[in-house]
Length: 189
Image (cartoon, rainbow, N blue to C red):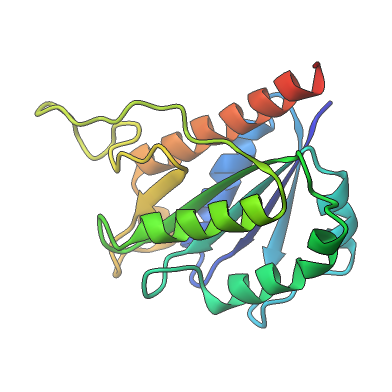
């Protein structure tokens, strides 16, 4: 069975809930381990072995000021050791983010993840989802935020974790399932 690692930082719990949705989707066909980056930007020492063993690594961070949180950036900087020996080369990579605004420059966060993945010689997986962009579309539709590069969620700044938009969480679950499917597909080649 393929191994999926989801490494993420969550400032207020919204990105954690999104990580769980990604994990739920991936768990349909893969073994999933979540690694939460703590408030100081650190991961447990055991996380490095989990990341090394993974077939796919999914990055997650809230979008703060147009990019990843400083805690995620500290984690990314710490990946220079596996980068130096190209330990993640040819693993699949993917990413997800959440911010309060509909746009909120979330694409900059996904591009940050893509750049990190490319530096590690990884292979990027997008959502594979068409956008819900017709007049009849509602906020609870799949991929209403309309991202192809990775899963995006928009949660109002005064919304609790329990008030996250169900369509965004459905999108995250489908995204997690796609990452797992692509990892299994790559493993059979």
